[in-house]
Each structure stands twice: as C-alpha cells, then as structure tokens.
Length: 265
Image (cartoon, rainbow, N blue to C red):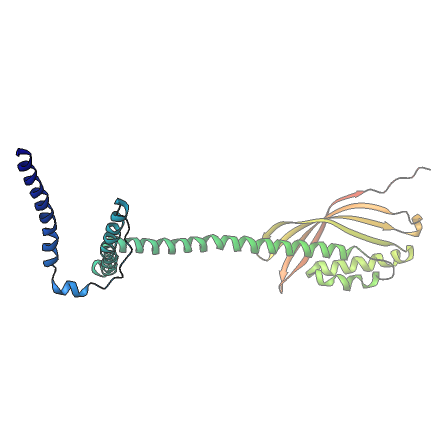
C-alpha cells in the first residue's frame, strides 16, 4: 500500500509540467497584435525536418544582416552630404601670406624675363659681330683669288673684274699695275692661279677693318717649259665698308716664299 501512494503523486507532477510548458506558448500567441498577424504573409507548409543547431542559427544571421544594411546604407549618404557642404562652408577669402606668395612669384617671373633679355642682348651682339667678321674674311678671300688669277686671254679684263672689290686710290694703283705687266705676260703666255688657304680678321672698328689672307700661287709659262713655279704669299688688306659692302683700300705683302723645286744641270 505505501508503494501505491507514492506513485500517484509522481504522475500528477508530470501532468502538471506538461500543462505549464504549453501555457507560455498559448500566452505568447494571445499577445500577438492583430495588425502583425495580418502583415505576416501566408507561407506554404514546409516538410518537417529535424531541427538542428545549424538550421536554427542561419535564420538568425539572415535576419540580422538585413537589419544592418539600412544603417550602413544611410551612413555614406550622410557623409556625402557633409563633404559636399563642407567646402562651401569653409571657403575663406585669400589671406595675407597667400597674397605675398603670389606677388613674390610674379616678381620672380618678371625678374627672370628681364635676366633672359639681358643675357640675349650680348648673345645677339656677339652673333652679329661673328657674322660681320665672316663677311669680311669671305670678301677678302674672294678678292685675292680674283686679283691674282688670270690667263693670257683674260688678263685685259682683270681690272674690270676686280673693280667690285677695290676702292679709292688702291683701285687706280691696281689698274696701272695690271696695265704695266699685261704686255709682257701675254708675250710669255703667263698663267697665274691663286688658291686661298685661309683668311682672318685682324681688327674691326666700326666701318674699318683689316684682314690677313694666306695663299698658294702657281705660275706657269712656256718660257720655263711649263714647269710650275710655286710661291707661298700672304697679304694684309685694309678694308672699308661702303654701301653695305666691304672694299679693299690698301694691300701689302706680308710674306713671299718661293717653293719651286730646283732642277740640277
């Protein structure tokens, strides 16, 4: 008999536990608002699957992620508005140090331009001087080559051909010299050829200049059996600029060396 009394209370406890476990579920169902019940869409009944810890965690994570996305999406929009409005709000007039910097840069630019112009002036002056000296040397070389190159056939025309390089008294002196040697050279059939080896400007002062010309002159004649006579000659020319041209007003011989080979017997 004592065993029966003890078993009966044990069954009552189990029954009471089952009722208490179901009671909260019913209470939770009763507290759901009507509006929430209407907003929940109808779902197709799913096949019963065994509940595991993994299936329970996945819906929880999926539910958490959509909740975080709106918050993240709103933050860049707010930051964009802030960055767009900040430059307008922080715009300030040019301050004193900035103005000083701009003014200093402008001064440096003007100074650099002035310095470049000052440097170019000597460059242009030197270039003009070089061009003038080249013109003098070229004229002197062409003049000597023309004055001392001739044949028996064109010797009479030599003064007229050389007149464009001569001026003043020297032009008259040269004409007289050619007229004096022309008959003898024609009779001996003398040919003279002058090759300019170099020319340089000694002095240049305004319209006046002096130049030195170095030449090799070859002289041939039937009288000497057409054996060439070679001489090295250098001349100093005094020149003057007239009508944009450099003309010879005086000529002197500096050196004269006979380089003709001597034949024995």
